[in-house]
Length: 156
Image 1 (cartoon, helix red, strand yellow):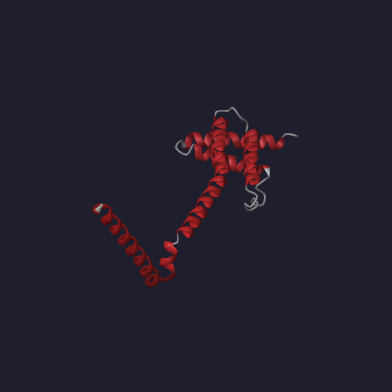
Image 2 (cartoon, helix red, strand yellow):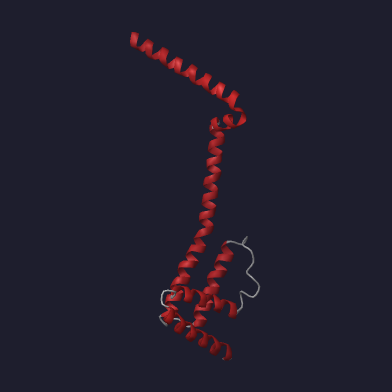
């Protein structure tokens, strides 16, 4: 019985010292210390941060998917499995998908939706993909530019 009494006294003393410590800390530390001890405020801050993280993650998924798809399109174009027109159209579709998923994004730059701007975007990606092989890059880009010119000259 004596051991239980000591345990009870020690528990009460710990509780009293904890209450005193928190009281003194909040009085000396002011509002900042009180806020840090406020569990509900901490949980609210944590929940807000988690929500912001999820929103950013959700916004990033379409952009990441677009980047992966553009890399795939460029590889297919370089391998001659796609035409320049097909690659340009797919790039434009991917950009439009991201704009639909994120309507609060700023509008595209003037002229970026036209064929010439979209084709230049594809060529930039091709150059980036072949950056380690400059000779091949120039050859492929020249072929694609020629294909662009022929496509523009052809009646649609």
